[in-house]
Structures are given as C-alpha cells and as structure tokens.
Length: 187
Length: 181
Image 1 (cartoon, each protein chain N blue to C red):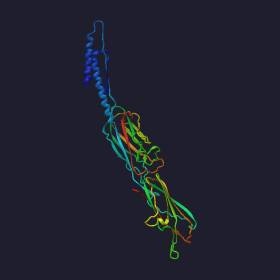
Image 2 (image 1 turned 90 degrees about the vertical axis):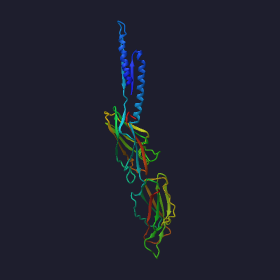
Image 3 (image 1 turned 90 degrees about the horizontal axis):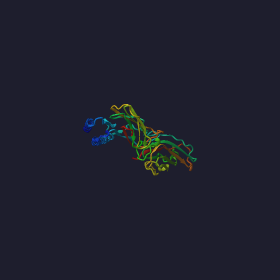
Image 4 (image 1 turned 45 degrees about the vertical axis):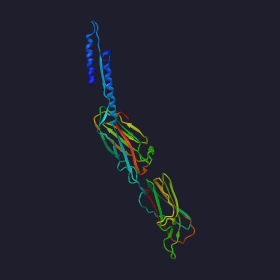
C-alpha cells in the first residue's frame, strides 16, 4: 500500500506531506512481503517404481529348440525379451551337462558337450559369457558368470547361442538337454 | 490512517486560513489532491500448506508409466483483483537421478508429467521437458472471488513406452496465484 500526497505552493504543508509519504511506503513494503509468502504452495511429487526382472514377460517360460544333426558342427540361438529395471545377475544350468541320448545304448547314454554363450545388453555393461555345458551341470556351476554391474536391461533381448563341434561323432539317436536360464535382482 | 486524517484536516485548515489573508482585489486558492492505491494481493483463505503428493499406481507391474491423472485441491485462494495462475517445476520432471535429462522423454531415470492448475476461470497447463526452474502462467482471470485452487498431475509415458528404472522419482512443483511467475 502506498499513498501520494500532492500540494501546490503551500509551504505550511511540506513537513506533513513528507510524513505521510514515509508511512505509506513502509506499509507498502510490508504488504508486498506478505504476498510473496502467502500466495504459493510447493507440491513435492513422489512416485515409487518397484524393482522387476522378467524374461519373455513371464516368470517362467519353456521353449523347445531342435538343432538338427549334431554330428556336424553347428550353432543355433534363441532370444528372449528381458526386462530388468534394476541391477541383476543370472544363472544358467544344464540338466545333463550336454546333449544326452534319450535312450541307453549298451548300458550307457552317450553325451555330446556343447558351448553356450549368453549375451545380454544393459545400459552399463554387456553380459557376454561362454560356458561349456559340462561346467554348468548340477548345483555347482564351474563356469564364471558375470552380472549387469550397475546396469539395467529395459526392453532388451537376451540371446543364448548353442554351438557344437561335430566331432567326435556320437551314435545315432535322439539327444536332448534342458537348459534353465534364470535372471534375478541383485539386491 | 490517523496521519492521513491529520493531513486532511491540516489541509482543510490551511485552505480555510488562506482566503482570510488576501488583500482586497486579490484571491488565492490552494488545491490538495489525495491519491492512494492498494497493491494487488492474493492470500490463502484456507489450505496452502506445502504438500507431499505420492502418486499411487505410478507404473504398471512391468515398470511402464501409467498415464493416470491425480487431482487434488490445494486450498482456497482469495485475491483483491484478477490474478494469474502459475506453475514452476524445480527439476523439469520427476527424476530418480539428479543428473538425468528429461529432454525427449525417453530417459528411464526421468518421468515427465503434465501439470494443470486452475483458479476461478484461470487455468494453466505445463508439460515438463527437462528444463529445470521453468514455469508458465495463465491468462489473467476475469474474477477474483475466493475459490479453491485445483492441481492435476498426469505422468507421461515415454514415446516408446519403455519401462523406467526402479527407485523414487521426485520433483517439486510450485503453484502460485498472483502476478505471473
């Protein structure tokens, strides 16, 4: 609030004019300060996003893969959509430690070892590990597996590539293995 | 006011005194003009305290943003003349990492949002784009009745609808009624 008080040629009024102007200016400052403090509000926005890690949009998926004649060198791969929004690690295991003949032959079940490569891009590092099938069998995994570091894999694709040498040859028959690939949050 | 009254009475006194002094054939006239003005001011009539707003259902189970609007009243604001409604964002978007850029809307460490504030017939909408300390003001209202200030927040999906990282996303939004920010 301010007020102005004008006069013309009245020496008698001059001191009074000055006094009114001072009071008005003071009131103006007070009013402005109050307005600055009392006409706004701060809204502190918060949203929480939980950690999630999924393969193929599900917690569990089983995919059959036919690789053809394993007495000839070959390679094949399968890709899964992966979505982990927090740092993660993975595990991989082979049920038989190689492609094992589905029926016994002379009391044994011939097995063909293979290599498996795991490739998962993240926004930090790319996981790129290769293991021999016999090193990922059972509960003790002998193959060193890396993790995502501080990275996340948002709408990425994990690729598992299986390759086999073709020699030594194995007897005819049907061979199979089950590979289990698991991703899990690190914390 | 007391001083103003004194001034007025003094002025009247002075004016009353003046005509008694001129000599014959002369005249004198004093003119006193009193001018005042009232600064525009807006105050919360109720509410107006800072608010912590947690956006529930911020994302789906697969960490993709849900464009779910949340509306809330901020309090009742009264002004002594028409006023503007203004919004200002501190971080330029809801961030989970301080140095994340929200420009373009595809950073998984940032969620942009649309904020709309309304008071009387003044309304302003702002889409964050990563510009910190940025704001916008409405057209001036045509009314200044004491009314509730409403705020609506709508998080925005990234252009590719990609997921966002786990964590806490925050921003501070300032809503003001008064002169433009």
